[in-house]
Image (cartoon, rainbow, N blue to C red; front, side, top):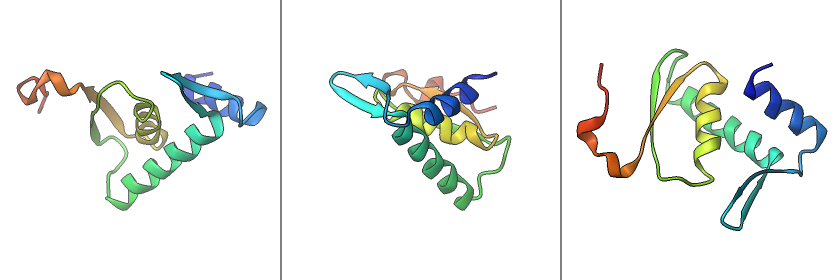
Length: 93
């Protein structure tokens, strides 16, 4: 069982249970998976193919996980960059 399977089973067990708690913001498993599916659909609409890289440029926030899971859900490889790291640190290979 991988982490996505665990999230999916948590969704089935209790979609209203909290998945993310972040400085007073609560996101349920149902909201997390729903948002990840929307991200995945948008990536497909943008013609991002399985195996493509997706750069996530984001501070620590609750929005990070749905984007991460949306990219991973259909085989996209995602990597992260924090805003303070600067463009010079991005791997362009």
